Image (cartoon, rainbow, N blue to C red):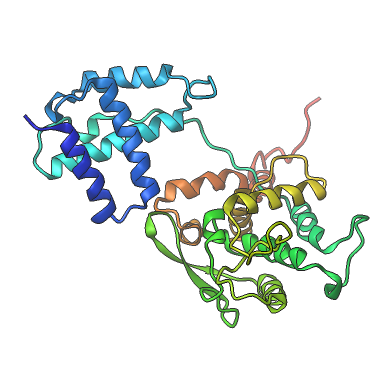
Length: 319
């Protein structure tokens, strides 16, 4: 009888070595799969049956998280995706178990995306350049932190980077003489991203003001507490500064770095970019992920409706 604990450890090593998954991904899969096996009493692979998985799905659907709320459908699906991947590994290694296609994912409600309208985008991009009364400051009077924050906001909108990707950028990675650079995103996939003239301009101003040897592109400049050298910003630090500038711009809806990524994609599609190109620029492995933007980006729908609907009556009102 196959030892499930031994096979699980081999599978996690396979993810890390052969599949080159990040340590964070491996830890997540370890958590999801151990939750299943502990719930099921560590059955052998042949004991993973359709009925057992169905009972597990029912248990997941009734499980409450640390906050006391039921697990969301997306979180439930993460557990099932990990199980499907493990079953696929078993099949490829000729270990008898449940077929992968027997594990269905929970049906997800249609996703909606939040993005900045043009006026909101302009407002948030202006805030780092203004004093407390909303008056524009000359570039020479801008503190280095304001230059950094302006460069961050412009880079987020210009590239559509994920916040973790932005926080991990180095100075050597981004050559300002070029309008593009390569970033390694989810699944260690490489993609090319592009810098607008505005992003390049503010990045250059910020880097010229820097006097440190820190390799990170964006660093913390708060050394008052310890006097130590600066270090790269964390994703959480970037999130806080985006939220702060959104509030200062008078934007009441929740704004995060991912909102800037949504705004980047929406802007491209509204201006005529094809969805396959946007998929490549966002680094999505599946076109399905990119399609969440299409229902909010077709600004010509009303124009098409008015041009072609009910033309025989000419819009006349009966009565």
